[in-house]
Length: 422
Ligand SMILES: [Zn+2]
Image (tube, rainbow, N blue to C red; front, side, top):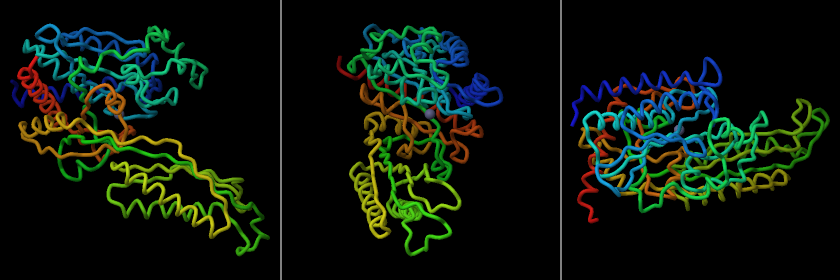
């Protein structure tokens, strides 16, 4: 339908738009855009104008998701969902979330300009809260879409004491609890969900490829370990009589690194460490640390987690230290729908790009949407694999590839829908 040249100019527009949208921030000079804030509201206005100009009807739902609907060429057609998130982490980059919304918008703009309606409707979702920065929440936007948002959360307060309900009202939404009780669609009305997102990792760059089709979003376990040793005087307590909690924890941390390095596909991280009493002249009595462990294979991940628990027990037994271990979070791996994965691969190959499969180590709204409909994701290479950082960057030719791939994906979907028996 379109030439390379117009894909290139679409990519330029997308990057310019991401630059412009980066200015909607709560903190001047950096990008920090939390759920239901004034800069988010202002950004909605700008994006809404683009959506309307692309032939969409725009609304904001009860949780503050921005939704643009592009009607089908026939009545009673099913709906394909596209989208990503509009909120950011603190001091964020320009492309996490927004790139996916802008690539989808670009494809819809081009359809509209060519007067093309497809045999299915498209809803473009700009999720209100993926990063959870304001309320330490998880996926409030997509949960509200699927009917999984718990209205008792409306009373949660941010650091200024503003509840979610108050924030939503100020944002122009109606946070009546009944507005969250049902999903926006029933699964049979939907054709699936597709999210374009930067990779947030270095693998595509390492392989010198612009795009990857995501085959799963990797499950994770978060555990909390407490090492109870014996506090003592750093000058008078002889080494052979010590039960140093930090030495035990240190031995454990290195064992975590060693195991993760020896199991293909496993990543394990100790990211938080609290030492008590935390004085230079006191032998540490207590240490608490976090363990984040991820592997695509649920059984393998659980096995590695319990293996590490045994390692910690052995270290503690040898050092005369008591151990406590608590499971904080356990999310299984979510697999992308095989038919959508294949369609993405077909689209990439048809556009002349390699179509590698990649597991997503990071979580996404797609995890929540998978409870409602089939989901899929397309990753776009990002420079140095850097994300959640102001220096987040994409190459223009990779954005061009993403636009070409999504457009081809939509046309392949149209073909599928047309041959589907009614
Ligand atoms: Zn993101």
